[in-house]
Amino acid sequence: MNQILFYSQLVVSVLMIILISIQQRGAALGAGFGGGGEIYSTKRGAQKKIYYATIVATTIFLILGVLNILVLK
Image (tube, rainbow, N blue to C red; front, side):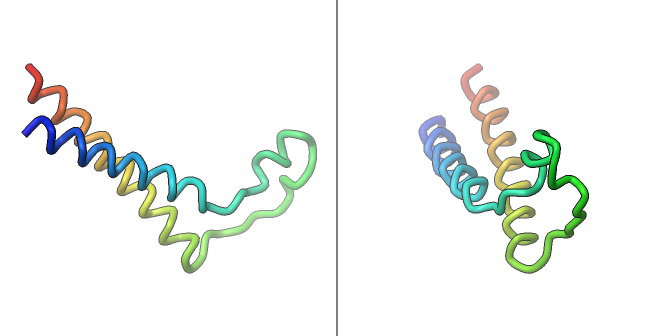
Protein backbone atom coordinates (compact mmCIF):
# COMPACT_ATOMS: atom_id res chain seq x y z
CA MET A 1 0.00 0.00 0.00
CA ASN A 2 2.84 2.36 0.88
CA GLN A 3 4.52 1.83 -2.49
CA ILE A 4 1.29 2.53 -4.36
CA LEU A 5 0.92 5.84 -2.53
CA PHE A 6 4.57 6.72 -3.15
CA TYR A 7 4.46 6.04 -6.88
CA SER A 8 1.11 7.74 -7.34
CA GLN A 9 2.47 10.82 -5.54
CA LEU A 10 5.51 10.71 -7.81
CA VAL A 11 3.32 10.63 -10.92
CA VAL A 12 1.17 13.50 -9.66
CA SER A 13 4.26 15.56 -8.86
CA VAL A 14 5.59 15.12 -12.41
CA LEU A 15 2.14 16.08 -13.74
CA MET A 16 2.19 19.20 -11.55
CA ILE A 17 5.61 20.18 -12.89
CA ILE A 18 4.35 19.82 -16.45
CA LEU A 19 1.15 21.77 -15.78
CA ILE A 20 3.02 24.61 -14.09
CA SER A 21 5.59 24.70 -16.88
CA ILE A 22 3.04 25.08 -19.68
CA GLN A 23 1.09 27.88 -18.02
CA GLN A 24 1.47 31.22 -19.73
CA ARG A 25 3.65 33.75 -18.02
CA GLY A 26 1.63 36.63 -16.64
CA ALA A 27 2.50 40.23 -16.08
CA ALA A 28 3.36 39.59 -12.43
CA LEU A 29 7.10 39.46 -13.02
CA GLY A 30 6.98 42.50 -15.28
CA ALA A 31 5.02 44.40 -12.67
CA GLY A 32 7.75 43.64 -10.17
CA PHE A 33 10.19 45.60 -12.31
CA GLY A 34 7.88 48.56 -12.79
CA GLY A 35 5.97 47.74 -15.95
CA GLY A 36 3.20 45.63 -17.34
CA GLY A 37 0.93 45.75 -14.31
CA GLU A 38 -1.69 47.93 -15.94
CA ILE A 39 -3.29 45.18 -18.02
CA TYR A 40 -5.93 42.93 -16.49
CA SER A 41 -6.61 39.70 -18.32
CA THR A 42 -8.82 36.77 -17.52
CA LYS A 43 -8.03 33.14 -18.12
CA ARG A 44 -9.90 31.68 -21.09
CA GLY A 45 -10.13 28.38 -22.90
CA ALA A 46 -7.23 26.00 -22.49
CA GLN A 47 -5.40 28.34 -20.11
CA LYS A 48 -8.33 28.18 -17.69
CA LYS A 49 -8.48 24.37 -17.91
CA ILE A 50 -4.74 24.09 -17.26
CA TYR A 51 -5.12 26.41 -14.27
CA TYR A 52 -7.90 24.30 -12.75
CA ALA A 53 -6.05 21.07 -13.54
CA THR A 54 -3.07 22.44 -11.62
CA ILE A 55 -5.28 23.14 -8.61
CA VAL A 56 -6.74 19.62 -8.77
CA ALA A 57 -3.29 18.03 -9.14
CA THR A 58 -1.98 20.03 -6.18
CA THR A 59 -4.93 18.97 -4.03
CA ILE A 60 -4.41 15.31 -4.97
CA PHE A 61 -0.69 15.66 -4.23
CA LEU A 62 -1.40 17.04 -0.75
CA ILE A 63 -3.97 14.33 0.00
CA LEU A 64 -1.56 11.61 -1.10
CA GLY A 65 1.16 13.15 1.07
CA VAL A 66 -1.08 13.11 4.15
CA LEU A 67 -2.19 9.54 3.40
CA ASN A 68 1.44 8.52 2.97
CA ILE A 69 2.29 9.95 6.40
CA LEU A 70 -0.71 8.25 8.02
CA VAL A 71 0.17 4.88 6.52
CA LEU A 72 3.75 5.09 7.84
CA LYS A 73 2.56 5.47 11.45
